[in-house]
Image (cartoon, rainbow, N blue to C red; front, side):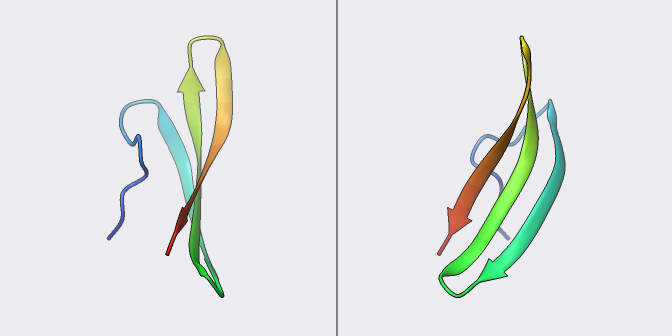
Length: 43
């Protein structure tokens, strides 16, 4: 199991996809001024 690099409160909608180089994790992060989509590559 791999946790999102900055997982915690204000993190939503995680998604995982396999690729030929490992896996890609995406999630929505809540920020003070709105939200953003975060992406991490796991090899």
